[in-house]
Image 1 (tube, helix red, strand yellow):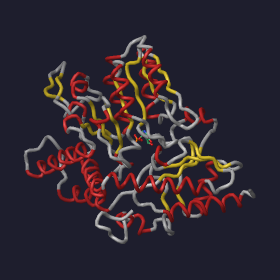
Image 2: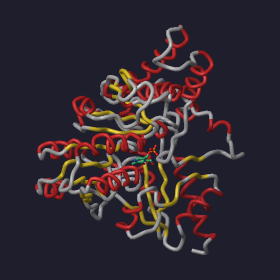
Image 3: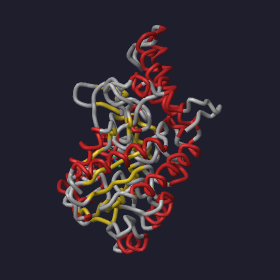
Image 4: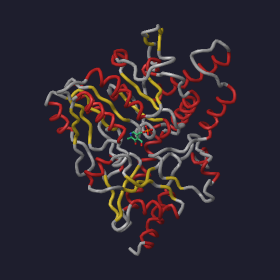
Amino acid sequence: METPSGGRAGVRADFPIFTQNPGGRPLIYLDSAASSQKPEVVIEALAEHLRKHNANVHRGVYTLAQEADAAYEGARRRVAAFVGAQPETTIFTKNATEAINLVAYSWGRANLAAGDVVLITQMEHHANIVPWQVLCAERGAELRYLEVDEQGELSLAALDAELARGDVRLVAFAHVSNVLGTINPVAEMTARARAAGALTLVDGAQAVPQMGVDVEALGADFYAWTGHKALGPTGIGVLHGRRELLEDMQPFLTGGDMIASVDFQSATWNELPYKFEAGTPPIAEAVGLGAAVEYLAGLGMERVRAHERSLTAYMLERLAEVPGLRVVGPTTAQRRGGLASFTIEGIHPHDVAELVDRGGVCIRAGHHCAQPLMRCLGVGATARASVGVYNDRSDIDALIDALLSGREVFGL
Ligand SMILES: Cc1ncc(COP(=O)(O)O)c(C=O)c1O
């Protein structure tokens, strides 16, 4: 991908890890769905904040503390604007997992009872399964699943049928599947849920890094994502929520900063979003995420999506050249995000990942934190290659070469 100014070295040159060859050989990184690499501007924003503006937030009157406040709240405004949300309803968490747990604990515990249903899908990451399992067990509610079809997609008719049963209180689903790559029809799903009186939580961990997301237009009641997949640092995630819901909800974690006042036996809560940010927040990480979304916005999310869609189409085309290889999920790049999960007959996915690593190619193998989906697919694990803004066709070519040599090692 080229820089918006048409810089010849392209976007890859903005990411120092590719010039420093940490493993002593060129890095071919095809694991951005697990965590993205970081551009220099993000690394520099973190370092610059720690070097020049470091202090705790929301407590100090001195100039340095006010600089830290301005940096943290500025990052919140930037992050909110990046996805069409309001700063007051944009809560910083540790990651997407914590954002989803926040909703399960704060909304779920107060609003679910026996007879109620949480509806999720078979393609969810464990982060969007286990919190609902624990919540439903605690509240005596039921956890039901929308099925994934042969093409790795959900059926709106099946969603309608579930909603028509009248007991679904929350529908929680991924915007983009981290295994199948499927891009779900979020706006259609949230509209149907709303019409049936159910709330929605969308897990946008795989979507925000690679496509333009407008949380208000999507109509989700809650939208969760994570910084480290979106070119930002680890240790920071985001929850956007509908204001009335967040205002009604009790805090998830309690302690400093989230209170208005504390007496010996009781306390009152701070306003949004601070009510949900107990303790010292991830300040430098927020600043880093602010720089990351600014960098992505500078590239333009339509260009990012077009680049990753075209690379994914090329990857699907080239993977078809490898004998015995089966890709799971939608067959066209149009309907999937920037990844492909696959199996190769006769080689375990972990061996696939290890073999391609010999060619310097980083891909992921395993259940990808989606064990129920693995069961539906009838496999224990898959290999997964995923792309980012810094990849180009030569990375895919290197993957295919490494896969073909890997087959030879196995005498296939
Ligand atoms: C779809 C999806 N949801 C949630 C998560 C969890 O993200 P985090 O570990 O940053 O909380 C991931 C990470 O792999 C993911 O792919």
